[in-house]
Length: 452
Image (cartoon, rainbow, N blue to C red; front, side, top):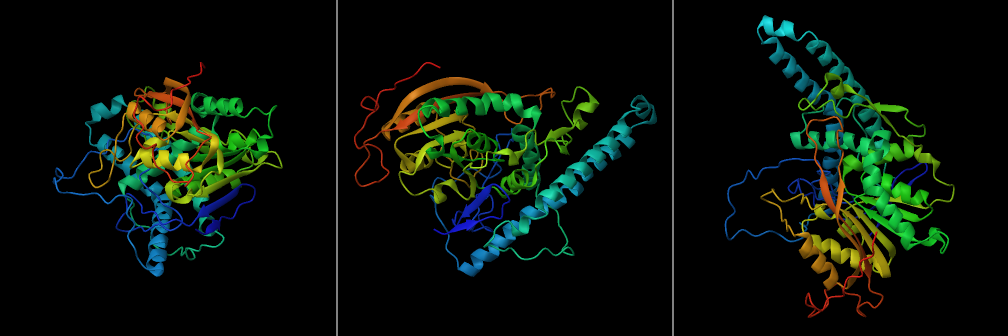
């Protein structure tokens, strides 16, 4: 498996050559290097099952990889890369069409009704200005993405190339990415980060106390790193930390904020401008958020911080490498969460710890053409124990939000599970990843649940 590095000023970004298929673009994307799968970012998206009821004989290819020539793989990779670039470039047109529709509908009202709403059209003008500002930031994000990968070229940008309409799905993902800047890199996201990231970082420091070990030698992996703030914060504590992400939307954006932003609150986004419902005040829709709230370039000089791009299951196959795997709102992104448990067990060193916080909003649940195994936490916990993990800490009710608009009249609250599981120091001699043969629920390692 070949390593492919990305151009970076400070943060070491690298991508691993993996051949995972894009879940949402299985016909079009044999993704070498980067796999963009359904990444809903835990926003409340109701992806209704639009397919007919499944035939009883229908089968689902399990982690299947269609084979094609290297030339075809490269072509499909370039095609998908430019598809995501086009989504960034289509943003203004897409959202302005929505605003234009709102204006047309307003003007269709009787004059007596229009006169009652004297501030409606001026507010639409503000919305248009906010959309223009968002568009400028999005163009800055993708401006240098063509050469992100030092040994992978996607062709030169042809400014004359017409940007066609992007799918509603891709535009929703782009809007969700804008809200990720709030969660990860703004003062407005601090409360959410404190409820999600702080417990994880505190547990890392409890497991690997700085006064008792050289934290720079402690290797920590953060799969599903998004825009990279959690991994950055862990590295800022002195640990050796690597984030992993598979979405071009996230990778383009994390590259921008980590490598090209060096002044606090120098940039402005309007993340709620797309929300036309559940606004108490008209100004709530157009309120700004400034980022980054901290200079991403301010890591200590000897920090060991990196990001890799690719499918977690494909990238991380070497056994006994990591002291700690930290997952936040991640395990429900799996087609089969048991694959994640196996991989985490495999890559952890004997005695290493897995620290998790998140819900179980399975991302592929309502996609008729996708494999999706929806397990309860009870079932997941049982599997974790059968793989040989020892559960040391468990909290079954951690309330938190995800990219929340704190002024919206509709808000979602997640009741998350937090746990710490330790890989048993005695591991299989053949290095294979199989549950303990013959282990029943009763004979699984007992929980040593610490009070927190």
